Each structure stands twice: as structure tokens, then as C-alpha cells.
Image (cartoon, rainbow, N blue to C red):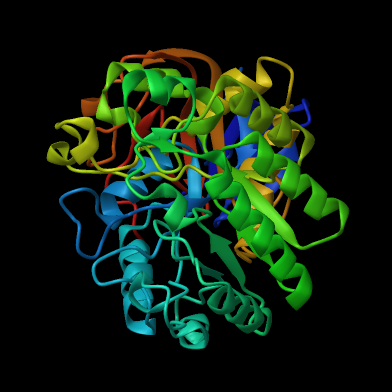
Length: 432
């Protein structure tokens, strides 16, 4: 079916109609009659290129009790995404061509988003031997992002070898920056709050020391490094310094590290337990500013679903992680756009174009232009809604913004010209 999106506001601020035929954008401007196309009223809506997430946990294979590729893909579409990178810490680990191809095929069969598997850096995420990087790159999944996320590539020699290896396949190592010896038994950010509530502290230097090491290794090798979920002011300064030296480093920040602080640990509610931990107000301000000025390149959700029992327990026994695909864009809208820190054009760069470039996904993150594949989302900045976990598309309810009022919501998502979300409703049977 062909579609005519009427009166959308483009990222640059211009209002225009967008006509979609055979999966591509064929007109941006003023359309006449619909001429057989289904009309989508976009008055007051922002049209953005389909969002791309560099950091998603879909859990399948192995932890289908928390999420499946299908349920996670539906959550992504509901949040305005047309492409997600699925992290490797599955069971079995995505450290072979066979496993990444399985995830890729599950995504293709679901049909809601372009699922790009992330390959493990090390066998079994154990940090001892390099995984089959070249085989995963040559597979049908065409892996270009490699990460042991959830675990740090702590061995400097292995990290150097990984950076050398991915250089030859135009890949990137996405590092979970956490010095393990400095975080043994850690439960939350090390600071005033941790000392007052009696939870073991997680020092900022545990993140910063790994980033400092790795940007120097990336410079030495001449390879690409991506830093996952940056959370401290010190990390921002190291990345800013590295970019000033023209080191090929990119970085992401999560919506929850933009929004929340370690003060929430006073509740002892395990929904706020996350890796890296929620940081101080000063750290939150630093990462907001870094996203605004481009030091931090992208927003990555680190969508980490868990079954109820993994969070419905005491803090120390709870799993680390939060969901985020369906609330990321509203959070960025409220914190960054409404405050004037970012324009919609900047959001399109940080949540679509740059993550697609980092992952080397040529078909995604493209501008809204005639001839481009119709991957786009329509966002209503005036919509007010309450986050009810049971009404979200993800299979897990561990959202840190449950019960909060959100301003702004995805109304429609088009993936390769096919609607996956219309009128705020995720469609059924979209694969084709």
C-alpha cells in the first residue's frame, strides 16, 4: 500500500507532505490529491528518520522469559525505532556465526525492525580468547559491532588484539567500561548517598580508568572504539580529550543516565539498580551537556528486560538493568528539546544518523529525502501519557519511569515503507 503523510514537521522545522510508494519516499513537499494512497494526518507531528539503537538486549536465545526478538522488536517499533543492535550476552553467547545468524533471522521473521546482532569480543564473554570475529562479519548477519557488554574486556592485550582485528573488517569494539577489581560487590554509585544508605559503592574511576586506557589503545592501533553507557563527568572529559586528539572514539548515553540520579537508591527499589549505576546530579548534568555539544555522539537505550522475579526481591539480590526502548524519545524530548539544548535536527543525528554510521548500517539513519527508503517515525510532542508497565510492548516491566507522566509519544513508525505502528498502535502481522 502507498501512503501520504500530510502536514508533518521535518527535523529542520519545515512543514511538508511525505508520499511513500513501494517502500521509498517519492515526494516531500506539497502533495495534491491522495491518488490511491492511504492518508496519515500528521498535523502537529514531528517526522524523524527511523530511530537506530546501538545498544539493545533482546535476550533471545536463552532468556525468553525476559524478552524475545519479537517482543523486543515490537517495543522498538512502538518507540519509533526501525533498527536495533542486539547485544551478545544471550544463552548461548552470540560468539559464533551460527548464533548471530539465528538472531538476525528471528529479527527478519518478526518484521518490525532491522535487527543487527552484536558479536561477542571474547569466547563466552570470558575475556580470555577472541571470538570468531571474521566469521561473524562474513555471516548473513554482517556483524560490524563487537561487544562483551555486561562484562568489560578487562585484559589490555585482548582489547588491543580486538581493536587490531576489527580494523580489517571495518568494525568497532563497543566497550563496557568497568574495571572489575574496583567494582567487586558494588551495588550503586560511590558517594554521599551510598555511605548514607549502606550500599557498597561503585566508584566513577572504575569507568574512567578503562575509557582512558582504551582511547589510548585505539589511538595506538588506529582503530574504532565505541564507549557504551557513559555515566560520569570524568568519562566525558576523557572522551572530549580523545576527540580533540582525533582518536576514532564514539560514545553513547542512556535515557536513564540523562534523567535519574543516585538519590533514587534511597528507596531501595531494585528497579533503580543498573550497570553502570545511576550517578550524582553533577554527573547527570555533565552527560546532558556532552550530548548537547556532541562529545557524546548518540543515545543508546541499553534496554535490559528482566523477568519479575529478578527485580521483585531485595536490592543486593536483584539483577542490574532497566527497559527503555518505548520511553527513550519522550525522555530526550523533555530533557533536551523542550529545554532548548537540542533541536529536532540534532535529535535525528543522535538517535538515527550517527548510530547507523557507528554500526555501518547503510540502509538506516538516512535523511528524509526523495529516493530514500521510507524508514521514519512520527512523534507527537504534545501527547501526555502515563507509563503503565503492563501496557508496554516489552515482555518485562522493569521500567524506571513506571507511573510517570511523559510528554511526547510515537504515533506512527514506518519500516521500509510498511507501517509497524499507526495511530499509536503496534500493528499485527507486519512481516512480509
